[in-house]
Length: 319
Image (cartoon, rainbow, N blue to C red; front, side, top):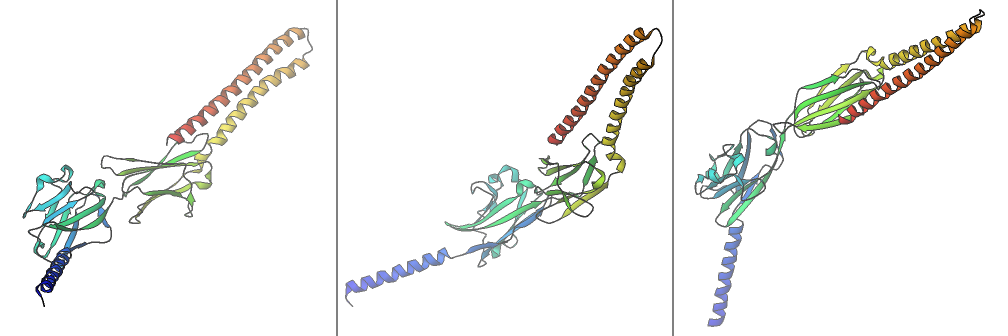
């Protein structure tokens, strides 16, 4: 073999060796961890682990945990020590890196006092020189309230309004009204707010127009866990008599006013004495006054009725 071919052969061997070394280096390790989402109860301690594969000593590596931005770690281990000064403020003193098995390439991130802000994805990165690999774990924070209350408003011209309240849910739960047979009743309104712990406070209202739905149940459940909380109430029949009482009051008033007009008119026709003209004039005046009074009272009652209905509609809309 001449010198030229020998040189080409040697260069080929070197190139193959370099390529093999690069390939080995690129496949030096991967990072594994939990593949399914982790459920983290509100206020609890959360632990997330990641592992080098194949197992190897990671004491000399950089181990970084972050949420959305690489430059904003929630925990950082480098040069054999924890770098607390580079952690974003809201995770200072809330995280701890357990390194009991770091010699085998396994570490565990511990997060204290879990809250809704901790919901989301977590990146675990092992970096050796310029080579690095990562694993992403999804965390789902959950909070379930065991307290569900039903508030009953006084009857109005539209019916009876009942409200269901429950505080301290995460994520936002599902709400529905059910009748005594378990059937779903459409809610009049649903609303929510966030409290100081960033948990959801829920409110749901229902308008009952008659006594056919006196037995109702408020049901709330967490979609992630399937856990359900509920409370029931049975309303007395008397609460649905408001519309009947209102109608009877109006009927009695109109009947009495009609009698006040009809009776003087009857007397006017049966009078036969000498003062017929004088009494007739007086009765005509009284009839006119009573007629005007009746019209005024009817208008006033109608006005009050529609004011109450409008106020009820506004209250229901605000709810």
